[in-house]
Image (cartoon, rainbow, N blue to C red):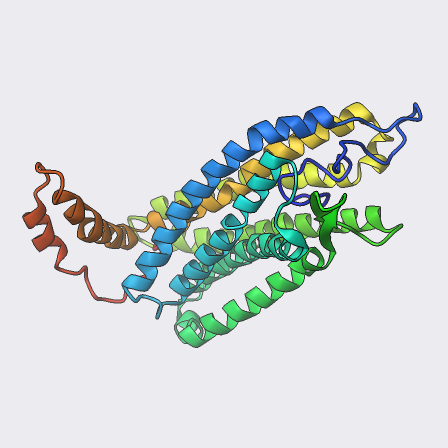
Length: 359
């Protein structure tokens, strides 16, 4: 999320009255009321769609992983934590949707700080667990012998706890600085007087380093090693795995790069563009659009990291037949309920497969 206001608000410069504190050359502030109105019309339906699709996908991942008790596999521990991160982020969206629809924050000062902090906690933990999944794949394929000893459940639990602690540390400024403003109508960052620009720039740099630079460097290093290993391996499915690897990198890059770059330009717009009001407005609009694209990534995570796995799809089909189709067959005559019930009563293979993407 941007460094300027609580999620769903256009920018700090707009605040509650739609103006910026900067002088744009004519002695008047830069009016941005139309940008705020545009966000109020477009953002609620878009984020509602993200909320529904993201909840459905991540809840399915969490249910399948826990129901079939495959948390003895390190990758699945990380997958479950990734789903929890996405769910934590998604569950804060209704608060921001309500705030935009009614043009005010209606949940009090305590929830303002808590929801803002949880929003960023989910955001950073999602990115960190994607990094862990990347490193886990690298160890499992490139250093398979070492991975047999290192990739234990204990290691997974400890690294997951450490990851949540680091995500909490990264999100700490949001817990501290997000407060009610403008007589209780706005939930956003209230930085120390005279340090507003410094904190906004720190936020933008933090997002670009932790949210884009670090994961992309990790992916490039790990996946290049994975590709070299797969090319030497006489596995007939290696080319499918390589395509999947590049798809993961391209998807992450496409979803997150535009938002992080616009966030950086917006935070440093005074230094880069000499207080251009028109350009400031365009950056605010671009920030809203790219933010929606970036946050849609939490809907893609279940597809990329779980649903494409053959074993995961097998468990998902079993779950669907056992708990959805059999139930619906009681009310829809043409569904072969008895046959489906007999088929679904047999559990999938009880081996120790990884439910994640396997190569």
